[in-house]
Amino acid sequence: MTLFQSVGTPIDVSEGRCNSQNNENCIMAMPDAETLAIGYSPGLEAASATFKVRLLDVNALTLGTPIDTGLGTSDYHAQGSLFADMLGRLHAMQGGGAWKHTSVAAPTTFGSPAALTVRSGAVQLGGGSIIDASGVLDPFSGDLFCTFQHNGTYRMDGYGVAAPGVSLAPAARSQWGCLWRIPAGAQVGGPILPDGPYKLIDSGFSLQIKRQLVIGKETSGQRSLHLMWILRYSFTTLPSDFATYNIYYMKSTDGGTTWKNAAGDISLPKTGNGISILAYPYPGTSGSPTDGNSSFQDTLQDSLGVAIPPHPIAAGDWRNFDAFRVFAGNVGQGCEGAFDLDEDGYPMVVFAEYVSGGNTATAVAERAAGGLPYDPPATMVGIFASTAVYRLSHRRWNGSAWIGGVIDDSRNYLNAIPKLRIDANGRAIIFMSIPAASLGLRVFTLDRDEETWEGPTAIVESAEAEDARLIWSLRDPFNADRHWIAFNTGNDDRWLLPLQLTASVAEVNVANRIIAGRPPASIRHLMPRGVHF
Image (cartoon, rainbow, N blue to C red; front, side):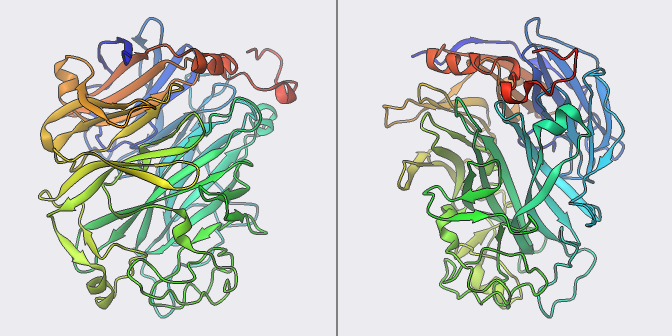
């Protein structure tokens, strides 16, 4: 079967060179069926750069003039993120915690910034940053969900993050994955007040969370939420380098109130005050003495056989953390963003798997030097090592186990950040560039009934696509066979490529049920007069 009905010509988005470090997963959104919004930051790594948005007419393929959100984007990871709600408003988030949105009356104007509060009477998410945010809209419930990593000197319940006996320097920050929700009623009737954020994954000292959220493919009722994440550890024995390792997964079928592993045999409800669903212990210590909300601990040992000590408060409410683990080992950073769901709602993830070389340190040596890696591989590799070798691999859930293997080990996938889409025919499509092999925009494909991946194959013959370095991917929520690719070239221009997949009757039918993001009848009466779908 031919993969693409048509491939457009790359469209130049940026005003000259642009910041190459914009959010790896979330710089495109569709406020309605006729409009694609794409974000970028002009001025390569410039401290004065602000996050800008351009609107594309998806029929004429013409770009509007740049819209300045006014949100700064100069800090690594803290760049703007973009997503759309049920009324077609665009929401932009920036690393310092600022959040802006357009209005129905003024769709090209971002209002005044608002700080995201945790809950009434609690500390704001200030004193740190909100990074790598991604948003998904449930077209049936109308709820908008956002996950992000928060990095700051305070937990969301106001407590400090130091482990017992460790003094907390201003630069020492805990990092965790959070969930934030704008209910449909708040979007329609206002005021637009977020529900949350709720702390999902508490990484603790010296760990970071890189995660990505995907909406389920249910055709009626509330859609499920699916989250994958990896760990990033700051080395003690290798200064100025990091390791990224392990892939984890969890899902929610009740709008984020309860989270389960893939098998569904472990269920984690929100605690009484609604924060801290998952928490990592501090290996080698007695855990955090101030966080009484931790509801998840590894009871036995990590992958090195090192015992995890009891948490002083949450003891007795432990579960095995490996029930959420998809893959154990070193992976390329950004790989948590390369996952999608098949026609049965089962997740698949594609990632760069470490093979050999590079700068390495053993977890035993890290702990001896005072480091605190959680559940690490025996040997950890630094992500900045240009001599490391990676292969392209995948894992998928088959209903009872994570299975999969190597897709391609004939090339080096160092610094590759793949993106994955699975269509209704069961075809898995990987969009990526392969920098270490000097290959630009490429695809791998796997049909549902096949056992062998095909590729890498060039998508379009153009100098810009062949020079592609970073790839962004968006499934069109209104046209099931349309897909959008954005990419940066080597000189940091940003380009947009429209793709039309081979028609799939089954998926088109699903898309027609949610045409233009039309909300269900149960909440349609809340629409203000003059708003039509």
